[in-house]
Length: 514
Image (cartoon, rainbow, N blue to C red; front, side, top):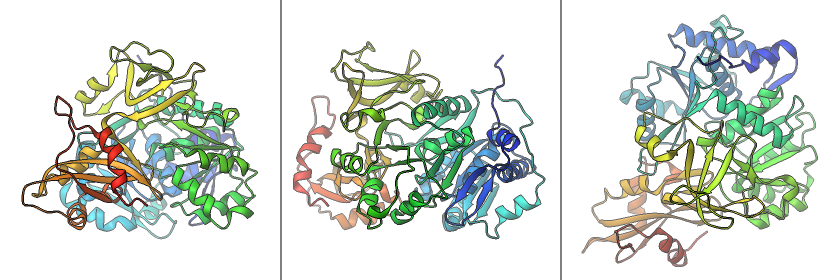
């Protein structure tokens, strides 16, 4: 029998350091001690229990960043439920699939998404939609908390391997996959984070990345709370506000993660030269490769940007460039973290030699046990205890890993993973299209955006405006193609597979890229 081992972080710190600062909400100015946070987490847990939520159930949140989100997540854990992270950038049909697959009875939502929720209420069986403004103002959420009698500690014992978060990652076939994130994964990922980022009770994280993303919740919001530090939550990224937060001695921000587009916006903002960055200890970049020039610029500014590699399936806790190797090793994604073993695998699963290309495989306690309701995906992605990332890379003789390509042609736009198959499925509905392939192309604002490479049926024409009209409301904004180019036929190999690497070489020169 498994040994119960889940620990209630909030209740523990409320007992040993009740007056320590736990949460700061930038948008509302709210500040919570651990004692206050523990009370609110307990009220969330009690309210969920009163609505019939049981251990193991999923509880969704569809919210902009706020301290409410962290209360909801921790409140779920206190009474044994799992939090379901819902990406508010998705459209109603996309969210409908996720909700029907995960079957939550309760969804917390930001009042700004009321129209989206109204659409979902027509197509799903969610029993309770609990609205909050994310600012502590009058709302059904605040009323529910005020009326609840707080559950101030866990009343059940949970094995570490039980699910804590269900987080959906877009699938290459167009069907999102629910990644099971366990309490064990979060514990060992927090340990990894502490070892690389010197996290303790004095640490203060600025949570700018969306909290429905593994990067937002795990780097460093959860590890800092695990250690008894403070998480400062920014509702949405705004470079001036972020720089003001860095500049605040009262906030004392020590830890931060961003995507390259965030670091570029911070670099270009007029407040940057006067901002005091001296309190920042650990600054990470994720989701996509950071341009060398950007890393070097921040290095001259006194900030060491450590590039890393991780996935939802690995709790965003795979490998990182040690700070002492920046900027010399820019271009690498670093060395494996303590609790994530990595290798470059040949097609037969044997380990590749240094410098030899292969697929990145990983194993260890930060790796997901599998996908929700997707046995076929589990069979495909796991081999003898190893998780197959789908990414092609290499390892040098010093142990540094490099990402060389993305298997299955995923690209990243504004920090969001985009899988072309999903977009192509929608575009094939247009009667003008004989065949289509979507690739990512360079974009100065978003890093990459989509380009539809189209072969038309005889006698037909198609414009970018028609594509935009067709996908609007069907696909999230970050998935919608920005460019289109027409070809006579898509390049294919002998087995009929589209050679997207050829398109990535030939198409960008035809476009007017930003």
